[in-house]
Length: 101
Image (cartoon, rainbow, N blue to C red; front, side, top):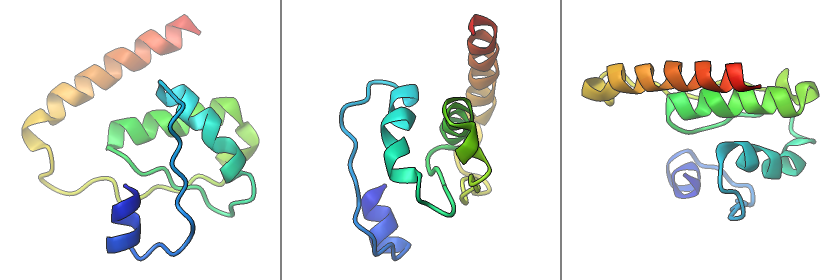
């Protein structure tokens, strides 16, 4: 993603690679110090994963959630054959996570 941001999207800032996390929850938690001074926060990943990360950021730091902005996550036709399965998985996983908390 860093290469894409730099080479394709023209990002000129200093990329930071977070290598300690073992879950999306930890990845969001470890990234928070880098986000505190940002005017806008854009989480870039697969749509289902980005949505999960946005939800986790809102839970961990509600004061940062209003800075979240969506990236261009969806491209027509991308992952078309797998979308129903990924959506079903995301809905099932979300229901399980929500009921566990």
